[in-house]
Structure formats: C-alpha cells, structure tokens
Amino acid sequence: MLSPGLPQGAVPRLERPGPLRDRVYEALLELITTRALQPGQHLVESELAGHLGVSRQPVREALQRLNTEGWVDLRPAQGAFVHEPTEEEADQLLTVRTLLEAEAARLAAANANSAGISALEALCAEGEQAVEADDVDGAVAVDARFHAKIMDLAGNAVLAELAAQVDRRVRWYCTPVARQRGHQSWTEHRDLIAAIAGGDEQRAARLMREHTEHTRRSYHARARP
Image (spheres, rainbow, N blue to C red):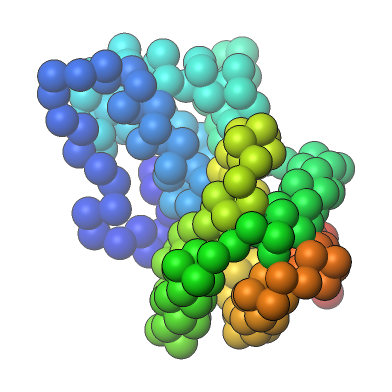
C-alpha cells in the first residue's frame, strides 16, 4: 500500500489514550506530504488502520477531514485516493509562497539578531549534510525549518500564520524536486543568510523571490523530457 522503499518504522504507531482521529489525521497528512503515500494512490481503510494500529473508524474520519482540506479525493464506489495536484494548483500556491517568503526575508533582514543568524547558519549546515548524504526527506524537512526560522525572525505574527497555512503543501510540492535542486538550493540559502546578516532588506527580498521562483520553475519542469 505504501510507496516502495519506505524506511522501516517510518509509519508511526499511535499512542493511546488521546484524540485518535486527530492523531490519525496528522499521521496520514505526514505520509502524504512526504510522499510516502503518492499522489493518486488508493487509500484502503483496513490497510491504513493496520499500519497505524487503530480501528477503521478514526481512519475514516481522518480521510473525510483530509478530503475537506483537499489532500484526499473521495470517489463514489471507488474509495479514497491521495489528491493529484494540477499544475495550476501548484503554480498558484508556489506563487503565494513567493510573496509571503520575500516579505519575511525583508523583515528578517531588518530585525534579525546574531542568535537568529547563527540558527540559520546551523540549519544551512544541516541541510548541506543531508544533501551530501542524498537524504531527500531530511533535506526537505530542514529546508522547511530554515524557511520557518526566517519567518520567525521576521517578527510578524500574521505573516507567520499565513505561511503556516501553506507550509505543508509547499513541502508536498518541494519533495519531488529536492534532489534536482540539491546543492544549488543551499547555496542560495547561504546568500540569503549573508543578506539578512548584513541588514540588506531589498537584497534579502530579491534573493528569496529568486530562490522560491527557482523551486516553482523546477516543479513545473520536472515532468518535461
């Protein structure tokens, strides 16, 4: 049921007691965003329940919630399938991401302190190590933390809330191109850190805009011959 090559132990076992439907929802969403469950893949309630160690009821409730949020498609007489995003959907979301992240970079350049810069540098080093190890999932996870840290340094709670709403979908779209972007993505991160550390608001915004646009173009080019 799960994608070939899923690391042993990657499917979480859920602890009790607790709001099981919420835990199941989070577990399935993580498997979708990391593409352990691939777009278009059939989701069988009994198999998911077995993997997660729960009954079918919380799985069914989680799938209904994921359907409402656009992660899963429920097809009459066929069942549940991981949503297959269209090129237009991806383009719209990644365009919004560019707007949010460019402003965050500008504000971070205005507000960041030495501790914040050090945190960005540490994350960048961690990401570079993941690329060297060909750890795609690890690189994507660190990339998300890097961008979240810039958002944190921006100091704008409303901007951070908006970014959080698109964060998981950004990870979903970035995973297929993470290996292709590889070292270049982290070189761009290094340039961003330098601009933020230097307090150059306009350069930081421009570099972030270019960085996110590179990812958007890579996503659209991934299937071309």
